[in-house]
Image (cartoon, rainbow, N blue to C red):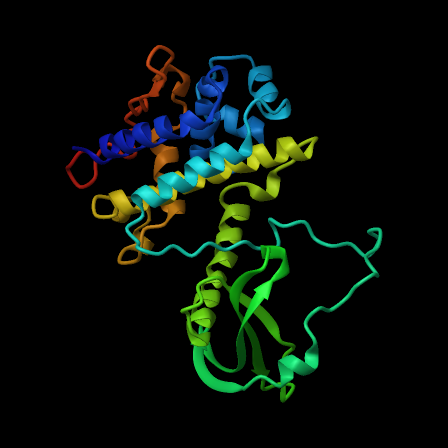
Length: 313
């Protein structure tokens, strides 16, 4: 089976599964927008619509986004279920960055009323452990204090509380303590630190979302519309990322990005290939209203990618 056929088969199955989280009347339009996001590197809705063979008036797409016909949370849950189904990992690390969490404001009502429920003297009295670990790409000197505590905002659930400090050689001083909480009580302090260090991967992720997936161009008139469009674009990135697990061996790296030969396949490279292969397709025609299933349309057979060293892609 050709690479294009493999990709079409996977996306047909995955998108059909995701459509269960979308209201029936919005599924065809949702399919168009989702597929458009996979082949459009910019965040504007108009650019995404322009990347496909549009079958409806532009107001159809506007209404789905601006009027909130599709809810974000069910889609997010469906995406997570799809990831758990495909990613070959026993344990997945879930990271929430402050980009996704509302920030505090100096002008917010009552922001100056604070109370520190963690008494500093009790924390300082905890046993201290110092280590040298390779974290964030370099060797770090760290200081740890740990204990089992109950957390009020988790309704009294017990957690391992870990206060972590890094030594700053330039200032010849320890940084302010960072509090880490782990619900798995059997994890040791070093285990928690290593798991927390994985959050560093979210930085290049945000870079890619902003630069290559259009998150820096998301301009909507309401928060609800912005969240929905961001969810659709993020879902498109997830699908491209999942494809890297499926098509890595068959991907024509030498033809698409020869300078990346020998390196791991990324969602960006998959998207670059998809833009050449699938731009301008009538994705709406792939949705069957009777069966409520999606079948990814056949490619246009662009002559630039028709031949990969004598073999069809």
